[in-house]
Figure 1 (spheres, each protein chain N blue to C red):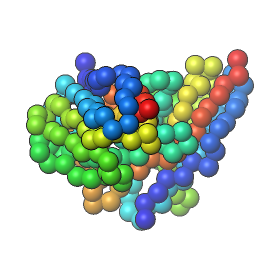
Figure 2 (cartoon, one colour):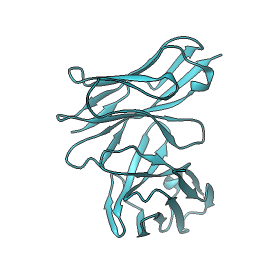
Figure 3 (cartoon, helix red, strand yellow):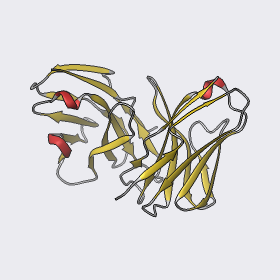
Figure 4 (cartoon, one colour):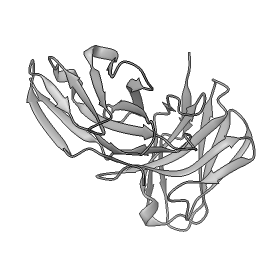
Length: 112
Length: 114
C-alpha cells in the first residue's frame, strides 16, 4: 500500500523554539517535496529533494531548511520558529518527472 | 511564466446538478495537467491527469476533464454531484524543462447542498 506519512500531525510551539517535521514514504520515490498551505493561497513550495543530500529551494525557502539522509525520509526544520510560520505543512513524493504526487495527511503547526 | 488560474474560489451547487470547475493555465510548451481533491483535514488526492492523447480524460468517482490547447484550459466536470463531493479542488501544472516543479492553482471550494 503506497503511503506518505507525516509526524507529528499537530504541533504547538512558542516563537523562537526549533521545530522538526518528519515525512516518510514507502514507495522508494526519489523526489520529495515540502509545501505549506494557507487559506486563500493554495500550496506553496518550500523545498524539493531529488534524492539523498540533493535538495533545492522552492518558492518560499526563507526560514526553513531540510534534511534528507535516507531516500524514504525527508525532514523540514524551522530554526527559531516565527508566528508567521503557523500553517499546515504537507509532504509529497513522486515516482518520476511529471508524475502523480502522493501527499501525506499534513501537519498543523501553531507558533505562539 | 507558468501559472495556473482557478477563477472561482467558491462554487455552490445542489446535489444531482452538473458541475464544471474552471482551470486556465499559462505555459508555452506541452503541459502535464492534474486535478487533485482535498477533503477536510486531509492531504490531496489525485482525481485525474492529462499527459497527451485524447483531450477528455476520465478520473475517479465520475469526474472527467477536458484539455484544450487553444483555450489553455483544463476544466473539470461531473454530470451529477453528490454531497460527498464537497471539498477543495486544485488544478495543477507540471511543465518546463524541470517538470519536477509543479504549479498549483489556488483551489476551488465546492459546496454541494443536500
